[in-house]
Image (cartoon, rainbow over all chains, first blue to last red; front, side, top):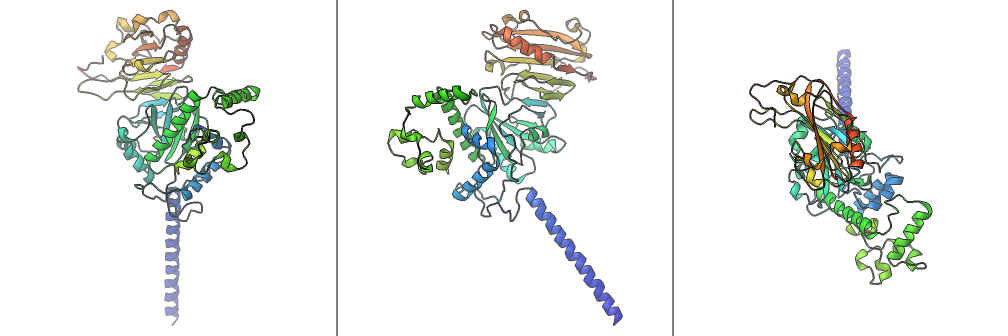
Length: 322
Length: 163
């Protein structure tokens, strides 16, 4: 009888150890999935998946970046709930990653320097020129990145507007296998392996896209996307916004960094050039709808309302695109 | 200040400069040696050794520069007798007729020398000869931040290094 009890006790103990081991293994797997961005039960994620386009948006979208990148994520989540996926998109339970700290510098655009997958040195100055540069922070192992690597194999089909420079940045050779990156990269694609760049741009995870206005020398958009077509469309909008701002605006208060009375005067000139004179009703909005019309397509023909076009108002443009 | 470092060449890039230090893939018996390109404009993916495909993209305020290494058979020849890289160039060193490819308005300069036991040429192009007074300091800033480490050069019999 005693022997039977002892044997049963040993069996129970063994089973306990086995169950504990399985639970530990399960926890490790869940943790790894979370780190890969495909976590289950993310409290901020949308279990239904759907499009989660980041705000690679117009030039004014950086107002949000300047204050808090947390707003980027909140806005994106809101959009995730309010938009439908593109017909050809595959829902991916990809989370946005950790909340970005509010003190994060989301406008600086330092030169990206590192090595190429073949071991050469490469530095790309994204500031100080007249073009927009789209920086794609990718990794060779992330599942979501695979679609982007594949899309980059045929650069002519990317749908990027003319004059946009595309640069892919992976982490450095100490954290990535150069051979794998080289195998994924198209020969004409500029790929820089630089862990420092990930730090400089405070990249929260991959994939992550940054759009830099070379003339202004700063980031004008950043975020994530599931498909490159989404990025290309937002880049196109940003390019139009940038051109509209630089060409259509007689005032360069924002681009020129004017402040104080000079900025006020410049803004007044810009408003008057657009036909908005002192006392114009549009200067005294009574509700948010007056500023951001809920339906751009149904804007009245009244010229005083038509002045708020999607191009001048990136937020409204994004809303209409949703 | 971004730093480029490869193949025994190091460059701390002045503001607005970008660049690459690379060795072209070997073709047949050719032995390629390191080439460094520097520019104040966006370098396209494919640029010839001395700027073909890039200099046509230059604006009047741009600078393009090449540091090109030759094979070991060049060491000790008269062309490379100068010891050390030029560090300060004057506006008079740049002339429109020194361009490898004569493009209207541009000017260039070229220097052959031996640095750290390695034979090089430095070739620079200004986007506007008229504005050389403002552009040459950028070239000098780049030169002052270039360094070459001694590196044993591989000797391949029968290979030409003049590519």
